[in-house]
Image (cartoon, rainbow, N blue to C red; front, side, top):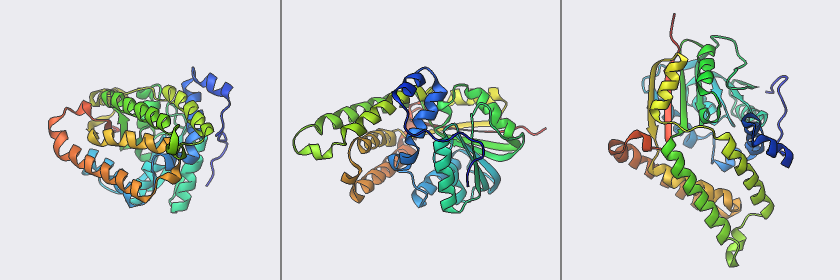
Length: 321
């Protein structure tokens, strides 16, 4: 399935384009995510099997445990490669889907993933502050790690409510908390520095990615500081959703120990050649994340204030007349 009259992906931004994007956040969003689109699933260990189906469904069940399923038509805002919506659809959350993203490259990959899974999904390149669908179109709008990329979050949520049918619900997960973003970035930078420094020497040189790839990652990292605009507390997102006009607004947070393991692991994976990391590493990374998640859910969530956790979730409903 292809998009109609949408911009084409630009996966190889020039130095001049990157320089311009440093002062234009929407251009930065497009360049950064087009650059990442074809490798994004590998970078973030995204799959469309039981592991990620359970993860995506777990986010919905956490914030809306009594949802009446399935929804009819669902849209993902800032879909990336379709991770959240496609896995939710595979778990029976919705029967039809639409994927939207400011990045043409991401929409292309998301539609390709949907086609490979045999899911009924269309897609459009879309600015989240001006969604190109009619009023009262969707039963459900979802997003994962998208709101923090949007300049005017309240306007975007107003648009989400516009395209929802009365009584329709939105669910956004994976938004970085202010405190969580601070410690995640600190750990990521430290891991990147340590890995790229140590692999300059001796036998560890075989663990070093080619300098050209490291330089390209550094250019992308420069844009990352531009595309990641916001961090939130749970109360911040509740206030934004309420101001946009939503009702039945609720928030939750998750991942503290899991984030402290996950961010160094992901950064290490990005800094070394992929062929150095086999099944044993994948089992360690996923198993460790599951154990830390158990610790978060069963121990830390009972004693640590929610704003200290890395991920924030928010849901709300469009009022009925």
